[in-house]
Image (cartoon, rainbow, N blue to C red):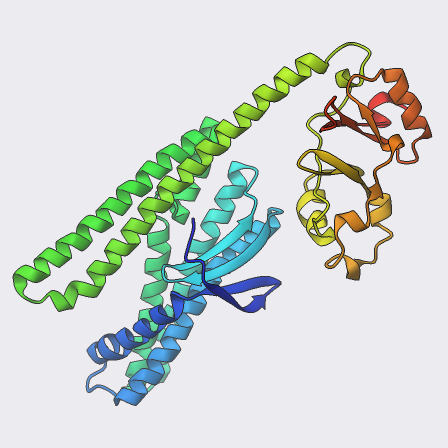
Amino acid sequence: MRLLSRQFQIARLFGIPLIIDYSWPPMALLHIWLVAQFWLPSQVKPSLPLAENLLLAILVTGLFFASVLTHELAHAFIARLEGIRIHDIQLHIFGGWARLVGEPRTALAEFRVAVAGPVSSFLLSVLFWFCLYLVQLFSAGGQHARAVVAGLLYLASANMLLAMFNLLPGLPLDGGRALRAILWHRRKDILSATRTTAKLGVGIAYMLISYGLFLLGFGMVRGRLWQDFLVAVWLLVVGIFLKNAAEGDYRFRAQQRASQQHEEQELAQKRAQWNVSGTVGAVMRSPAMSVVPELRVSDFIDDILAENRQTSFPVAREGRLHGILTLTRLRQVPREHWERLAVSEVMEPISEDLFITVRASISHAEHKLRINSLGFLAVIDQDGMLVGCLSANDLDIT
């Protein structure tokens, strides 16, 4: 999902950057105005002075967007428990979005990440209902107490609606992601699951768009378009956004599947060429898990090392070998330097004893591994491109 590109960071929460989109402040101001001008006067009779209504509306708006942020933080915390790094949390005109670096590796992991947000919104709704009950129980029922009750009622209802709306079973909503996880688990095919939930998401989008058009038409017939105009326009905008996001999610998965199949076909063809008995191509590990020289050490540790349990990594850019990164060398780097150092600054620079060609004999590879201080070799093809790797363990060399 792509949002407006103009954004700025306002804080870091639990190490996660909090990003505000430029579409969000106008939405927040509109929310304050709607609460102050419509919600509070409709709930509190006689109405409070405008200044007091505005003050309470600001507080209600702040708590509402704090609830949206809590919803996204719930996604982020569960994602972290699943070993997924969080890029940032964004607040924008449509609410919020926790951007993950990578995706859940299993259907159960995706399900847990997806339902975390609605569960948090539901619990917040219960909390606001409880606070409302306490205010009614211990207050004398004055005008200001009724205004506080109105604010708490709004927050309880808004969080319940947020949870229920997000549980609708269509992408990109949380309910769609949860349903996709269930279908993924049953079908063992994430693309098929995405196709189904994307269609449901488009269906939900069309229902929102249709209802928005109905409100516009009904308002014009009654001659009171102004009453439903904001709701109608909001439904149209949200519906269009959901439709585009659902279709975009499926296109991404389809392109990802096509790319994987193409890579697997190319790899199978190359392996057929390399797999000659007695050569490195027959025993190497392929494809090689490589890292780019510009990658920060902290990002390598968070994103690569956490998912790949090996002690040496080829360092390459566009398939061209630059060096070898070893955990032995990495352990010598102080933790406080991880953020500023790049992989190229801590890797073993490329040299003749660190790589071997794919058609070299296994006996030659054994010789190089014995004299190689790393016990590891990068494997390149006849064009000098990285195609695999070989370690002493692969050949049972001690």
